Structure formats: structure tokens, C-alpha cells
Length: 324
Figure 1 (tube, rainbow, N blue to C red):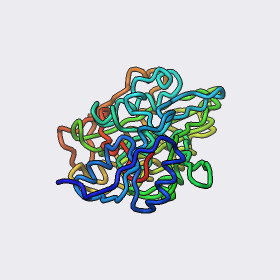
Figure 2 (cartoon, rainbow, N blue to C red; figure 1 turned 180 degrees about the vertical axis):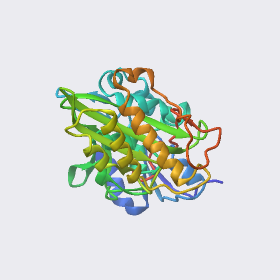
Figure 3 (cartoon, helix red, strand yellow; figure 1 turned 120 degrees about the horizontal axis):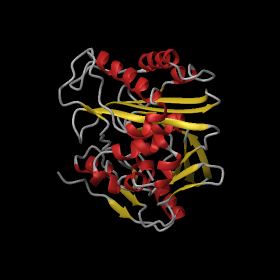
Figure 4 (spheres, one colour; figure 1 turned 90 degrees about the horizontal axis):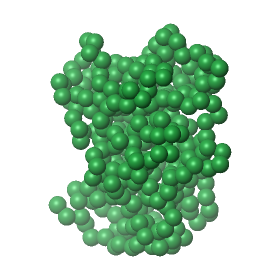
């Protein structure tokens, strides 16, 4: 099927792009990598009257570290750039683990992290990773810049907090204050499928005690879930079998899965619990477990033999909802 007719513009500055969005209103969409927007248009699930292609705007393809350790990811930074990033491997283990699990090489070569956040797919990987790390999105519009915490940015399934004339120009990951650890694990039926369950965990520790924790869930609710109670249960505590088990139970309780062809709600909660335990139990062995497999212990509910954990697919790689 072919898309409906639309007007195409390729501005060369953010100011020009904002002006075009102001003209287009609700009928305008931003194109960055197009890994979600283009398929939706071809299926006519989306029929924008105006496409604003920001790929000709210079200076948006960065990911860099500020002097204080804050990491900034520009609107045109591709998944593949993050997958190959020495910066993430050395400074952000959670992001480094998630990057190669995004979709497949074709999608990773074009899709963007910021676009994935804007698309707000409940099965998207980056929203849970950025949530666990306490990140936020920077938007620009006619009124200037504003920072939107990721927990406020994703307002629902395929919905975000951007105004019609705003562009998300970067995602920001605050600098950790203490030693950072964590990871991202995802269960999928096969390579190229959407996540059945995804779990992102980030912890900061000092003198053996957790000083900050973030746990976020993918694919087990109508939007990315921040398991706040589970994370808070770790703060001020050492990572012991007891505290890890408590956090895992609270994370499973925070999940809101539905039974479908990928598995029962009970099975998906079981996998949330399993992944939280697995990530928090790594200790110094995190490099050995960059992609796990579901526990071989009995798992409640149906799970096809083709289910695998560790590889991933987020075909919501980009900009269906005013992504930049």
C-alpha cells in the first residue's frame, strides 16, 4: 500500500523546522530515522499532511559526555552509533547492553534513540533504559527549550508530551554520583519480534550500600513502567539475596501484563522477577552476561520453545510521534 499524499520539507535549521511544525499543527510529523513513521504511513495508520525531515540539520548526530559525566544523545544519533560507542561501554553499562538489542542492523543503522522515545511504544527498549537511569528529553519550540523527565515525557501508548510545534532535540542521562552498575535484558520469541518482556536496572553504590536505584519495565503494560517501589526497596541497603528478592517481587507486582500469543500474564511476571534477580545478582560478572536466557526452572504459563532472551527488536526505532 502507498502512503497518502503529503507535503515534504527538509529544513536546514531547528528554527526553520519549528516554524514548519507551527504551520502544520497536528497534521505535521517529524522524520528522523523513519523506522516507525514510514511503515505506519505505508499502512495508512498515519496520514500526515506534512513531513518535516530533519536529517539536513547539522549538529544533531552526537552523543557525548559533559565534564560532570552527564551524557547527551542528539536527535540524529543512530542506534548503531550507540552500539559501537566506546563512551557507553566505559561509562554507561545499562545503555551499552541495550544498544545491540535494538531491532536488527537495518533498523539500527537508521533509527534513533530520541525517535524511539518519542514514538513511545510500550514495547520499545530505550524508554525503560532511560527511565531506569533517571533521564530526560530536551524539547525546543517557539518558546525556547524545556527539559521533560522521561517519566512525564511518555504519557501513554504511542503518546508523548511534546506540543505540536516542538521538536525533541536530545536525550540526557544525568551523571551518576556513585559507582554505576546494572543492565538490560529482553525476552523475545525470535530475533526480529517485539519484546515479550524487557527489564532495565540501574544502581549506584557507595561503601557497599545502594545510594540510587532505577528499575523500569518494557512490554508488560500500556506504557513503560517505572517500578518505583522496587527501586526504593534497594536504596540504603546492600545487594543481598534478600534485598534482591524483595525488589524482584515488587517489580513483578508493578507489571501489568496481559495474556496473549507471547505468553500468559503470570509467565510475563515471572520473567520480570527473573530478569531483576539476574541483573542485580551479577556483581563483578556483568561482562559475562550481556545477553541471558530465561531460567530453565519451570515457568508458569505458556512459553514457546522459540523464546529467547538477550537479543531484541524495537521496530519502533524512530519518529512516529513528533520524534526528532
